[in-house]
Amino acid sequence: MLSFARTARGGLARIAAPVTPAYLGRVTEARTTTRRASRQGRPASSRSEGGSSSTAASRLYGWLIPAVLVVATILAFLPVLGNGFVDWDDDKNFINNPHFRGLGADQLH
Image (spheres, rainbow, N blue to C red):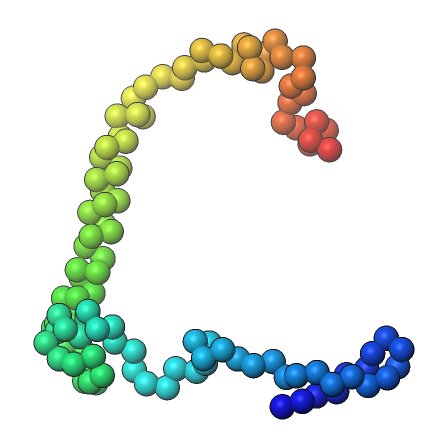
């Protein structure tokens, strides 16, 4: 489809209408990944309406792995909270550094 637009000199120029790529088009059918469909024992294109216990179980397992990772990460880094502050190089980097002006609004202008 062609459209017309005004040029800088006032004339008309033909321009092509933007074309939407196929991968940005509207989704018209239900989306179920092949892996999820094969795990549930049905072809990827068929989808039953309504909830079931297998859907609830898959939602539970979908949140179980990230929750376990979060808990494991918190437990791994929990001993850090018992440590004190280490100031090995603060005197060199901040206190005795003539080029460090601070982090206030006046210094960061």
